[in-house]
Length: 338
Image 1 (spheres, rainbow, N blue to C red):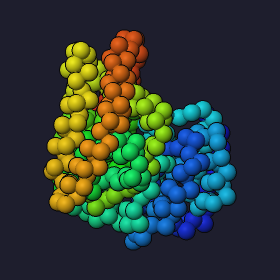
Image 2 (cartoon, rainbow, N blue to C red; image 1 turned 90 degrees about the vertical axis):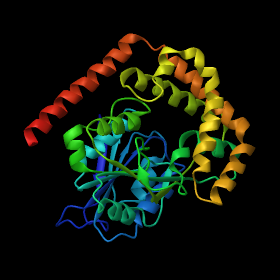
Image 3 (cartoon, rainbow, N blue to C red; image 1 turned 180 degrees about the vertical axis):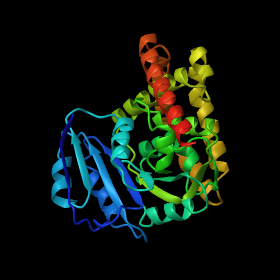
Image 4 (cartoon, one colour; image 1 turned 30 degrees about the horizontal axis):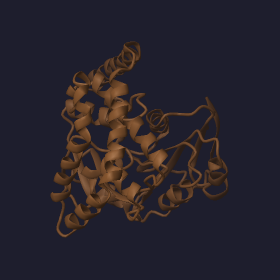
């Protein structure tokens, strides 16, 4: 249920007489420690285009007060019930006016030219583009471990390339893509994996452009770090019970999960070595110094994956029914617009 919303109509980001070119959408829940830095970076973008910022929030902390008092120029919607990230993004997409929808998270700080780099990349003909992720706390061992567990493929020093997966904290999609293929599922995590998989199944090319970068405020305390990895693993298993994603065999063969932390160490080193010199040497060293934390996080992820692989069949059936209904609706829309 939508509890409240406000929009400051004389927006410095976009005039009233025209729609913006870009809509930036941020899901938020209890983001009082990061929301000011996140929105400050977004409201001061150096970009040659009109844009709007849409915050979909379900916080119970001081986030609403911070937004009201410091960022009256954004479009703000507050929901009474906790809204999962995928659903919050869908709410924002439904309200977006821009031709390009740029997605980030409330625990991210975008670069000063983030939107301009997005526009430049979209001018190359790609309609789905993601960027790189940097670690905001690059000297903290838990933060480093979380970075390599979640964002190892998306280094600023890795090459520009077409890709099969992108995180939603740095993703820009032309709005008609959502109109044709739908948006995000109700998965608590891995909804970005499922979304990009759906697009790739329909032949949509997806670009990774490292010049489009953000900083992610990774966790630095052990309990939240392990809890988040468990959540990610649980939903990764659910996603692989729904879709033929890489790693789906682990759902059928869970006895392999104890080996996964060590396999992930090797895969992480493989990605690091593919990055540019001398950054790959520095990354390799910092990764090896934090491997114990990485193994703890990967083990928590594996335990969560095991739980997701054993989740009740009726839960998976409900999610599958929703996905199939959305797919049928999107197919009908695509046939109408063809």
